Amino acid sequence: MVKKLDIEENQKKAESYYDKFSLVYDLLSPKKYYHNARKTAVKELHLVEGQTILNVPFGTGQNLEYFQKYLKNTGLIIGIDLSDGMLSKAQKKIKKNKWSNVTLLKKDALSINKQLITPILKSNNKQKVDAILVDLGLSGFSNWKKCIDSYLDLLNPRGIIVIMDWYIEKSTIQGAIVKWIGKGEVNRPIYQYLESRVNNFKVDASFNRGGVFVASGEKNKKA
Image (cartoon, rainbow, N blue to C red; front, side):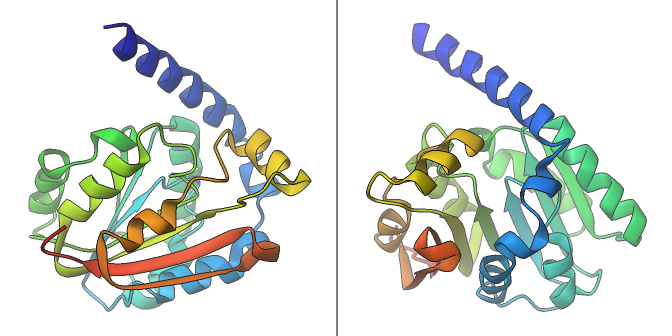
């Protein structure tokens, strides 16, 4: 029971922090800062018109323009985030651009499973999740390995998962700053774990001076 209460308390703290952070997120993390990594991450999803993609955490919707380059306002984009503040910012972008293929949902990362996603798919006349992008989240999620396993379970056979996040193995000033701002851990072996769970694994760890990686893989039926 204590553990459950601790998780709930940490979740409330995270929600409060990111609600406040949402007010300045797009200023502190402008498009150009993660542009190369985001561009590569979305390219690795191999999206085509009509497909369904899940993006978590959705943040302020900075990935939307990258998704829409391929989807062209077709298919379905499911954006999930814990923060009302972040989702509110994203909703403004959706309205401004008149995008009609986006569904937003406020949930924590660990609650994303088939029971949650299936009704969303059905209400949008969809049957499967073709691709998943997890960006700048797993370094902060409490049970990140369980999250990866749960997300892989959502994918259709041969569906693609892409993870974009920080990985700085040794202590550096850059790592300390990222950890302070993002409230996460920058030395988690995230892409190393993903490699053991997917087929056709790829990783590029050259972004943002070697601090950000983009890793991808295809669903492994045996995983």
